[in-house]
Length: 97
Image 1 (cartoon, rainbow, N blue to C red):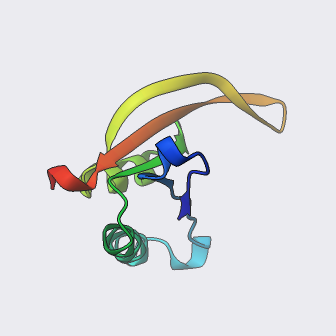
Image 2 (tube, one colour; image 1 turned 120 degrees about the vertical axis):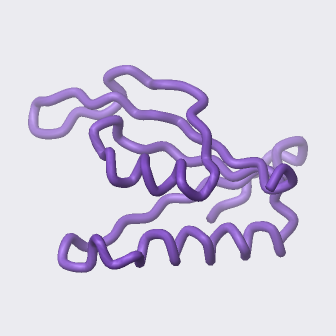
């Protein structure tokens, strides 16, 4: 979790995570995200943001299950192996939980 730099944005933080393939499907992602959100709340964050590749349906489902909502799409934001991938931006308001 990283706090935004500008004073008017310090209530916001960005989170990113990944799970090694061999450990996926065991609930680790949810536990990691809940721990990160708990720490963010204790640290005074109000808004937590993330971005996820649009084809990562498992991650999107996890994020929605813990309360993140979709806010937008960045079209063709990633180029991997010659293939463009959209990115979905999501956010969670900790004071609305």
